[in-house]
Image (cartoon, rainbow, N blue to C red):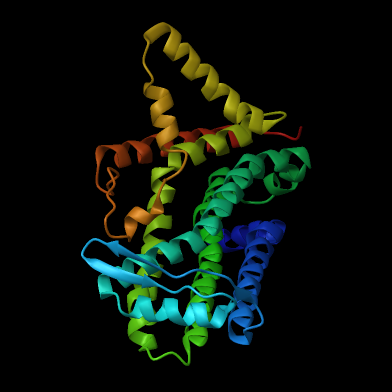
Length: 312
């Protein structure tokens, strides 16, 4: 086990650009957009043209702010006061949607980073012949594959999560600063319903469970990466496509296709923390156990194939 930290450092050093620099740049862009928006609001240099109107929403009658040439500061002030007048649960639901929509891009990019990392991690070792060096060291094939699995399913997601947390804090601080000068309780309006700490705990739970739920898919990527002699991504897509086509023609069923598609990604992470949503996916279920068994089997095959691997 003393080899594992060094192997993880190796993965980080070799993939620092996608592991660290990519989420850092995304976070910087997000914060830059927030600061620019805050400046546009506070400076009042940007104006908008809107009209007066009233409408009824259920039992509540709402008066919309409408004015020609109103500054963004005036429009924002009116909106934030309207928001403060809503109930706590309504504010919580709105902020859930806001924080989810601003975080989802990080998780989408994270998924692609993990996929391409697993597709290439064992293949590149053979392609650049570094496998000869690593096989000369007292490092088992099991430890090598496990280190790549941990790097892809834990290390990289946690790095992305840190920058997601930074983005959440930046959004909360910038919105709080923009709300200064309005007659509202900023903590009760923006901080309390945001539930930042609970959201982060939920994100951690989502990442850990997604790693188990998607283990068949990630195990498949590692197996192909350890076996393919060229174009591993083509094999990743081509073989399941062939299997599902044959299954459909000869049995008329879609069991393999449905199972594969279900475990490619854990969709709609919002179901973990947003009110009003439900999910058929359960942490304790036959499907989760099956995903764990199938994923472990594919990872075992990847380790076995790694033992017979040589340079390309």
